[in-house]
Length: 312
Ligand code: FO1
Image 1 (cartoon, protein in one colour):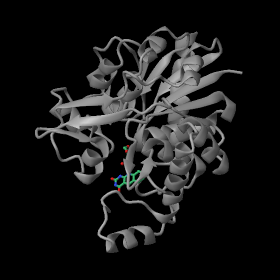
Image 2 (image 1 turned 90 degrees about the horizontal axis):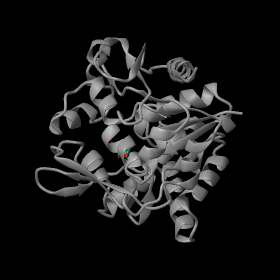
Image 3 (image 1 turned 90 degrees about the vertical axis):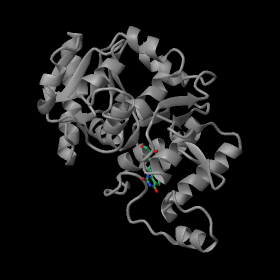
């Protein structure tokens, strides 16, 4: 038996996580989810990256947006509008059930990972989706005006504010989930795959937990990242805009440099071959744009083959 650990956040990460779930037996895949995007909203505990992974692997994710559920209805939002409440964060009726149920069980004292495991079981998701921590970590964004919460930046303000800095509130006190750290120490670990998520808001919150970077740097298996930049642009979301605003060059190489202390292999699109010629990490060229289900599976196989080659 061998184990693959995938780190994922956001829509792009979930695509590769789905590909990995289709090419690996469920018990050989552990998906560690970013929880820095989580927030309390309308009295509900919202965990977007966990839900995007859960819905995507359950086959019920909204195919247009990547977040929330497919075949959704919006009566709750319409009624909320009538009451003059906050409707900038769109909660579909079916999606709402997840937030209400998660909130109820967290309030009853269950851990985020226990609730996640049970929701996944109920939705028929076989691989384990594990929150990076059961302790709260919240991404905060410093704009030119002030510090704001992540979803305020990402959804309410549609990523318009200029990002000066990012912080992960709670990361110092939060413990990486013990099953995550234990997985990185397993002798039968085959690979760690960093999915093509935004490095700053989806992966670095996970890396900010004490012990994680060291565990990745010293783990026996190859650590492979898949570039979220294709042709010098982000496929989706504010990755490229953030790179520019943080004074970094918008390139696949920038991502590898963020992971340099533990990265063994980097899967990069053919279009970006030149931009990574100088990096110290071993590069594997591939078609990294995932449009179809087949693309997701193929890219998953490329990442695993890269790890298998590096381990030999
Ligand atoms: N993203 C949006 O751009 N607009 C929304 O109204 C929105 C609602 C939403 C509801 C539940 C959920 O799990 C995710 C939702 N997202 C929405 C996406 C979410 O903000 C992002 O997926 C992550 O936080 C960043 O990857």
